[in-house]
Image (cartoon, rainbow, N blue to C red; front, side, top):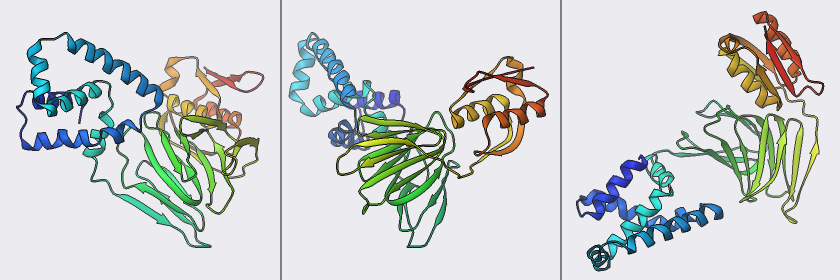
Length: 315
């Protein structure tokens, strides 16, 4: 449900014009108030509190008749409170979740010596290692694509989507957040540590509100469950991840390569951005090698800075 439509419904409720079904929906939102507030960051709560105080102060200067009505009908106070909170965007996700409540949660497990390949609806793939368990929705609906690795080890190849970040929740309280990349998580309950290793792209490892580290290609983070401390190191990953393009524009290609290799690729001529590319590479190739092939396909050139972090493509 859109925010504006929800506000209209709540206004109908305040005016006594809502039907039985609409009244029930508003009361269900109110029942979820504490649950929704618990998911909001402390910073967001502080901002919300200030906004609510401002709204309350404004309301106090209104006509005495309105004050009388609100005191006489407590349920209208509830609706008014929800309306104030809704204006700060707190209930938008809750309503979206209710709209997508028909989405089922799928749980997949593996036995000792068994591996499974899981294809998600967004194009992402997961290799679930032996003695592992993962939970994911039948379809992603919302701003964040979220799944849960409750036991074991898995290798993730995530489809790039800047508008919908991907997050893996772990039983240890950690969360791994990405836009589109490939990485491995080792999180066996019997183990004292959780390990995250990045093959391509960039991931952020979070513990509630705190970011423990941002990892890029060939970096790992080791988290101790006992001490709740983490350490980072460099690793050599030999996993070859396919980097495929099927008629993608050169702008899309360079954006994806830039994310995978943590580099900046600049198209010096806007006309180059529409060039179409169909090719398949893999993550074991160096970005210079891939750019060399791309440029030869389109009869263009590239240049790089001394540390190979910025690449310019031109005619």
